[in-house]
Amino acid sequence: MGCCSGSRSVQVRPLGPPKSESRAPESSPKNLGSQAYRASPLDDQDLGEAADAPRPRALPIVWTLSDQLPRALKSQITDGTIYVEKVLGTGISGTVYLWSDLASSRFYAVKVMPQTKFGTQKQYGYYEYEATRDIDHPLIVKGYGGYKTKKKLVIVTHGVPSIEKSHYGSVTTKDSVLVMDYVPGEELFDIMQGSLSYEDIQSVAAQVLLALEYMHKQGYMYRDLKPENILFYRDAQGRPRIKIIDLGFTRKLIADSLDDRKLVRSDSLVGTSDIAHMGMLETLFQPAVACGYGAEVDFWAYGILLYKLFTRGDSPFSDRIEDFDSLTPFNQLQAMYHEIRRDPHIHFPSDVSIPEVAKDLIRKLLCNGRGRIISWDEVRAHPFFTGSTTLSGVDFEALFHDVQASEASV
Ligand SMILES: Nc1ncnc2c1ncn2[C@@H]1O[C@H](COP(=O)(O)OP(=O)(O)O)[C@@H](O)[C@H]1O
Ligand SMILES: [Mg+2]
Image (cartoon, rainbow, N blue to C red; front, side, top):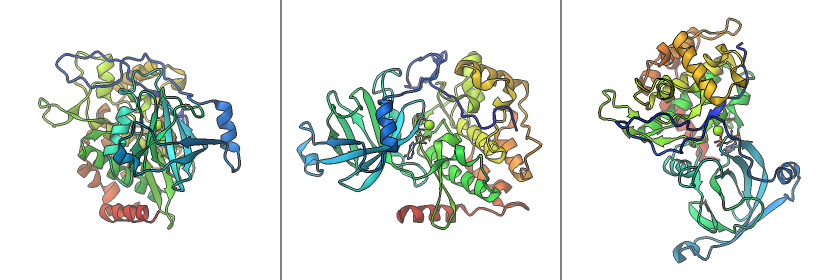
């Protein structure tokens, strides 16, 4: 096992890479410096109590219709009460709460993102709202939107907007709010440290493939594929199921006619340092040769995800870097850039048994420090999925059908 096994990845907000004039600039948050920012939008003490409190719950939030709502919408919705049940998780962009809506008897995950550090509302949280609104796939969390107006916080549930008063509890109108379906799963990050079978890992990999393939077809790149952003649960038959969450870095791809491969380009440096692709790193450390990056960053992160799943948490490059976890995000990226260039080969730990067919796919995805595979058809056609002596083949169509069926029965 590597030195950093089991540690969470450090997420990197845009670092303001030098932008060349010829490149299509991505409309992304501006330069925020190299320090990762951990948000803590609500009052911790209140939340601690809310998290532990048995019912009746501690933080009722009363929402009422807004005067500003168009009449047509007003007639579709009713006033109600939402309760904060507990904190589901925190990340770099904010805190996610489990909310229950008494009126509909439904649970929601609500991500509250303070605006303080990352620029304007339009820049931060907005893209995630846009992506969760447009993306509709059973393996990707469904979002209902959520945004704020000048005075009121608007929350959209059941596809129709309802309005929350701005003065309740601890959410302020400075926060951006995203309402999503609650996924009753655990982060793959925690699950992978236990004992996932080869078949479980193959199934997780196949489902992640279906989700990313869909996103790319819709013209999005995901840019933050890691076990912390995948929720894992088992269906009624005990089969592994996943949902991809956190579309905070998901962006529409920008077509670049100069690129033969018809990949789409971006030059923002975002994501998580241990999965940063060379195309992304070059925008910062070798701007003269950098030509931006496109969907290949997701294939690269997919290779690293497989490596992590089979090694129960190791990271192929960052674990070779001394004290990686204690470096600043900027220094982590710099160390990654030099390490991948120094030795682009993938080494597997000797104390963990990994099927040869999985090693081969991982090596191809992470080949040469850039990755060789840039089509999902090629990944599907690899013996890791078509069948080998260690693993039988995956029927992607049947898998998708099962996923849809279990989704419909929830
Ligand atoms: N829809 C959801 N259902 C259940 N838990 C969630 C959901 N969305 C997020 N979480 C939990 O909250 C954590 C942080 O959410 P995430 O969207 O990844 O925020 P960030 O952008 O800050 O990383 C996740 O890792 C997960 O544990
Ligand atoms: Mg996250």
